[in-house]
Length: 110
Image 1: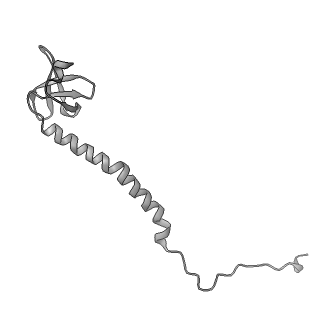
Image 2 (image 1 turned 120 degrees about the horizontal axis):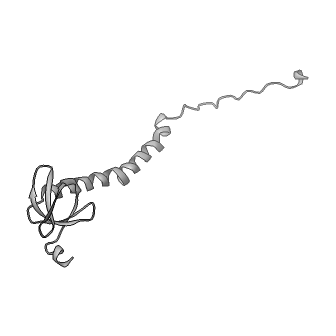
């Protein structure tokens, strides 16, 4: 029965060139661009602002820590900060634990 059916083979279209390899990587390049502008770049900006804020800390600044503790800076060392969180009560924290510098007088209002 095989002799009635002939095999059909597809022929290449005349003048058809191989696809451009850049076109196959284009979605990957676009995805990387989206990740860069939506995730990586804003995170780098926040990190730079955090480093600048920590570098600008001074004695007497009122700060908020990552644990939610409000305090006044008593002493600043290279890696640590002494915070007065209540009258006569001080704690020693890493500088990276400070998340925000508050306006003067915030502790009195709180």
